[in-house]
Image (cartoon, rainbow, N blue to C red; front, side, top):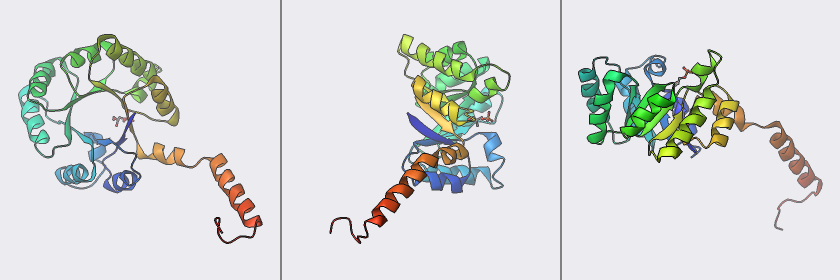
Length: 219
Ligand code: G3P
């Protein structure tokens, strides 16, 4: 499973990159709007810091402008993946960009058939939004499971990137399903780092070692 960070916060990205477990970053206009800095600068910094793929979303609306902006975004760094929301009118744009070797992440996916269509176009990532389905009392993780089955049925190459991950159980089940990629808010990583039984276990080993009264393990 690839683990991406779902944030535009450069301090948090730096902190988690140093652990060696982060494979990429996903951003969106909402995440950029929280950073209080020039968006282009934020994105350039993130692309430099991250060894893997960085998803950057288009903000244009007309298909021609989306195409033009996608090319501009793709040119800012080798590790950029252009994020485009699913829409009928964007399908030809996505097809053209894929042919021109631009890596695409299709975002705001809420159905198997949306995912099927963009898989046929050969996009790099498909992003189902788990939490937003859960928000309206529909099991978002079931969609991820169905997309993994669709991918297997037809041998599609596009990777399923579970987004809008809101809690540790989403991540847990995404792992059991075999989801290709999850993108996580940094606070979820923080949450799983400290397990009370691990902390207790370390304390017990430490106390038992000290009871031996020795300075060095291998003396
Ligand atoms: O990756 C998409 C994600 O940022 C959306 O999450 O919590 O706003 O539904 P959320």
